[in-house]
Image (cartoon, rainbow, N blue to C red; front, side, top):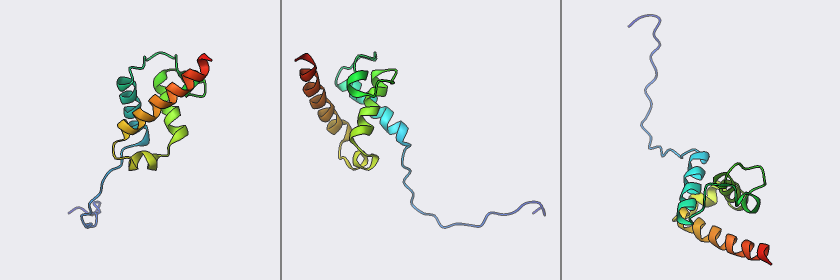
Length: 101
């Protein structure tokens, strides 16, 4: 072994479950919500779901999720896509009825 090479100490093998980055999980969930609820990729729901500065319904859905749930709450859901689909569907129904009155 060369004098310039420093060997890494051996470490114990540990079981490690990688937690996906928050952005990836939320983006995938937002995409799934758009598919399940037949939401167009335009900006028609930005004012209803977002803060107004989102560039698409996809971004507005992510804002809505972050405004209503923590990452831990989403992680603890048995089936997050199904739970969020029901919640978003109900939210849209309630708020679109209010907007039409």
